[in-house]
Amino acid sequence: MKMSRFFIAVLLILSSVCLPLLQAQSSYKMGVIFGGNYSSLRSDLFTTASGRLTATLGASVLLGFENRFELISEINFAQKGASVKTAVFNPENRPFIRNYALYHNSFEAGVFAGYQPLESLPLRLQAGGYFGGLFHTLNRSDKNMYVGNYENIVEATQVTLLNESMSGIDFGPAFGVSGGEGRFRVNVRYYLGLRNLYDNIAFTTENHRIKSNSIRVAITYFFKDRSEWY
Image (spheres, rainbow, N blue to C red):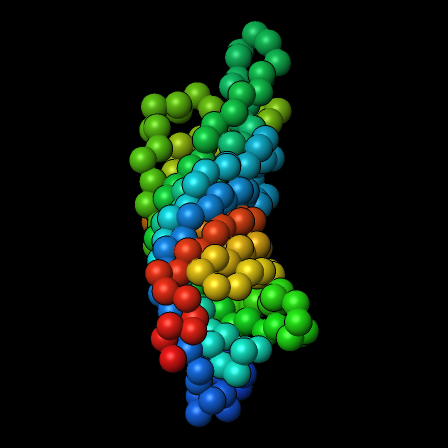
C-alpha cells in the first residue's frame, strides 16, 4: 500500500509538471552514465560504522521542453549497503566490537523532472523517484556476530539473519541539481529509501527498521548534442 501511494504521488507530480509541456517538446537525446555512489543504512538494530563507496553505471534518455524544463529517465546499476558494528560475545570477557558488511547490489529505474531557474545559467533543479531490485552475495558464516544489543546476547540478533533484508525491492524519492550543456551533464542527487528492507525477511514477526540512503555524483555523456535532434 505504501509503495503504491508513493508511485501515484510521483506520477501525479510529474504529470502536473510535464503534461502541459508535451506540445512544446523541443529535443531529446540519449546517453550513458558513469559516477560514484556513497550509500548507508538507517536501522534501530545496529550502528553504522561506515557507508559504502562504489561506482555506478547506467543509461539515460532526456526530453527537453522549451529550454527550461526537462524530463529524464534512467536505468542504473549501483552497489549499496554499509559496514555495521557487531558484537562478538565471549563467556569470560566483555564482548568486543567488529564490523560486518551488509552490502547489496541494485538495479534501479528512475524518473526525474528538471527545471532551469535562470536561462543564462545551465544549472537545473531535479526531483523525482526511483525503484530498485536488490540482491546480495553476503557471507553467511559469521554466526558469532550480533546486533540489536551489544551487551546482552539473549537480546541480540545474529547479523547473518539480516542478510535477506538486502534482497528484494527498494524505492523512494530523489532530488538534487544538474549542471552542464551539450553532450556532458553532471548530476548530484540524494536518494532516500522509503522501503523498510527488514520486511524482505520471510517469516519474521518482529517489527524492526532498515532503510537505505545514498548520495550519487555522476556524469552523463550524450551521444548527440541537443541541436542535432531538431
